[in-house]
Length: 485
Ligand code: CS2
Image (cartoon, helix red, strand yellow):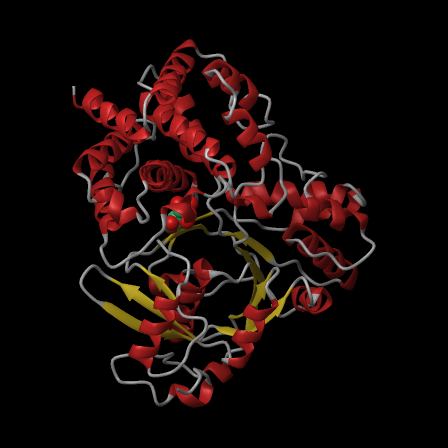
């Protein structure tokens, strides 16, 4: 079978959508850091639609942070790859043309710096996951003990992390008299623009306060809320792509049909017309971020830990149990109650749609994928709404329940989390009180409002005691009974 690339593109079957614009006529304008499945299914998809609608020099140079093979595969395929859009009843293939070429930051840091410093680059988008920044959310500054930050702060070789690369490129642009690019964070973090801005400024201030001030004054970091459920690629993804496109595509990605992108409209050096694929531009993204993080991501984490403790491999398997679905709906209700009123958004309808998205039988989304990096995810997904619920005298039980399941999952060992060692040792303590006390020593994890709350402690200690005495099956089914009352 021929490999997907420029020359095989013309031969793909009619039912497959292909880029309907002259790719060669569009220059590059974006460098993306973190060339994973989510970028392919989301920002590159939106940019492809924008190029098709209005052209422009907005093609993307994709940067894989560590994986050289990914960059090589992209270059061998002339940047082309397939998105499999998986509705419940059917799968459609679309070939995306917005990625021009790819680099690997680990092995080609100088080339990445050159791309970032090129005046043609006007936007830098990022998806490096919550833990990839090395920014401490409690202080707002960089975490000098984060291995990549520590390495890049030495400044004895080209930087390899997202923050180090961006600051080095901004330093060069400032020296060259080139306008800065706009930095657009596309990770699931609250107020992600402010978060990145503060991290960049602090990193720069550690060796050049003049540069830190310049970044503070000149670099726009709009916030954005991103959404599209995108499981990791499997062999099945590549097989379906081969079937539909009749080419071999090593980069195929599968995703749902739903997609959403809400972006703060602050791009001093211009931007693509991402509206072409439905992006919403607004002045204040925070309410949308809060809604998505607490409803979609919060219930996703609950689903993940229920699934992992009950031996359910996929999100859809959790949804196929009516009792578990009832717990998810209760969680959604509790999280909705912590949100500010939102014009134009019907929260009950949003939640009903979420349940259907999770149930999609055509999407095989592993609970283990969502269960990774809990210490990076729970603060904004579960613990922040718990703090708000507490402040408003609403029940914190659903949040305590999700947190206790996560703690119990940490006890099973073999965690994929930057704080794995501390979490495993805390979760293996012999009493619930000791577990909580240990977790509270992990910097920035448990908010003080919860640590000092009698109500929160009562709920979480009682669920942990139950888990110490009974099986997760028993504790989860008792919770279903309790919530039904
Ligand atoms: C998921 C998200 O892996 C996870 O933690 O909750 O990646 C989720 O699928 C996306 O945010 C959906 O937009």
